[in-house]
Image (cartoon, rainbow, N blue to C red; front, side, top):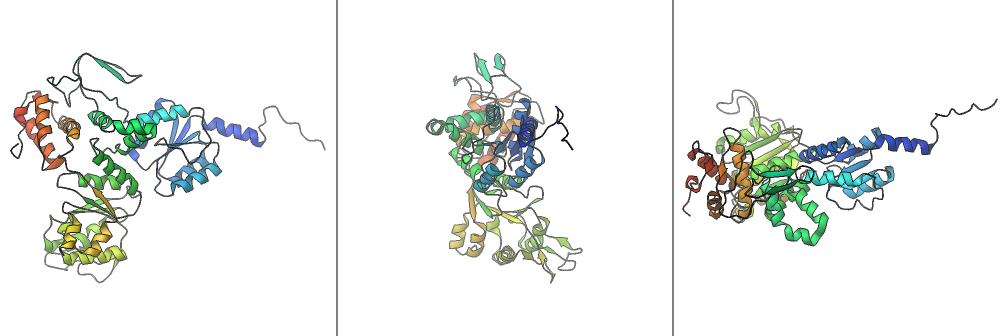
Length: 456
């Protein structure tokens, strides 16, 4: 019997199948990052370039996406929450050699050879996402002129949206002072290290929780990104008002546990007699007033993150019970004989250096070493004067959500910059709220409204 003739439109052969795969993959990208805010910005930037976008939180999801449907490019963050980056790249090259693998920090992807025809479009979108998709505007160098923060705009300014340039003959609104400050602080680093260093610095400072471009703040962001995807306990040390709770929130948001709860407990805010029950829970009748069985903060954080703020204030007796839980993963509610197994990631914070408390016998050394596996230090605002303008704009924009926006004069900003800020960022926020109220219905905040808690 003769073989049936092949119809002209029939698709056969591996080469033709590969062509079909490439056709369906065209202008499709998989975004792989545990940072939801970065994925959102990059997704929008690629959509503007008519790309179809799929998202993944880790290496396993990337491979699953590519198995389900082909893609032209994969944008990969510098770490993955579930796989070692070099191991993933090796598997990726073996399984999907035709897909363009692009690192979000502009580094080489382990010798990846595939380069898509539209790689420059993806790189352009990454740069937009890393910069927050905002133009960096510089204020005019007129020291006597007023700088405006939190207002709706400035007259006499022409913007070319295609190029992101601003042309103005006079003082202009700083549209993104944080980015401008970051550019000034890291200028020497960029000049010496090139494109990869610039992308790395901008990426490290892209966490939405933080405002400012001082190197100490960039280091905080870098350390958060490194440790967030792991189970590693983290200890946050820093002065009061320096943003330790924001660090804890960022660690949880960027972790694989972000879909579960972040439960916080301030160890200094609860009386010693109630702290154990608050932490571990209690059963009905365990003590006077325990009319019902109650779940503790540790158990409430099961599957998520437990944030122990001011852990240095925890009584020594309770420290021993916390250590026992950290070693075994099991706890007993107050008054109960049964153990409960709980899976939590511990993040602790203190304004008092725990190592000194250990040396004085005021904190258990074994618990300290359990908590301080990875240390993050939040810097004081003193010494970060270049961040004060960006923080001022941020807080005034926040206040403007509840009432008409106000501007702030150069003299008022100079007064803020000259102050030492013993209460750190929290004190700055309160000073600006106080100045906002003192300015009444006037559209500007002047130096007279800047009342500081300590004499200059």
